Length: 231
Ligand code: CA
Image (cartoon, rainbow, N blue to C red):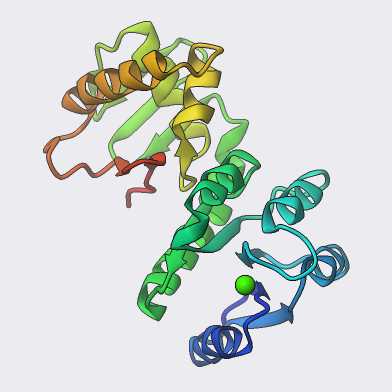
């Protein structure tokens, strides 16, 4: 039996059934909610490990559900949005969602996102307060401000180092352009987003063995970046 419990928030019954049938066949435990009010109530009373959250709900916006849950919990939230809700998707990530699925999605894709969230749960939390972060060959010593790949020190600029640390501290989580630029530059002008792309390209050249098929930093076009957990 999979030890993770998933809260499925979806008002569309056929989609909800597809999700719960898939979860059941992969030994997940689950609870369901068909509106935002029930979602917040179930999240607080059953303390699920991960939430799959549809953004278009009958009683309130899914983003509002995220804001409410984030006042007391950092549990991973994966949003499910229709294409027409793309702006909402970014707003949801900025509000504290971890990841997203765009409708229509495949069940394999959903299971893969759940595994990412599970790895974040089992790997990221203990590392968050440690003074040394390790992920695959990447090592960041926060105390000395140095990063390494294997035994080789990475010669990164102060901005690249800030971006790297921000991604590392949120390993497994999609960070939006706005979130990153606000944390690195303290603002999020278009110029900063353009600069971010440039810094990300140079950072990747230093970090990745093959920058064209990155192992550590994944690009989410039009959304942001995520550091993957590397075995
Ligand atoms: Ca819906």
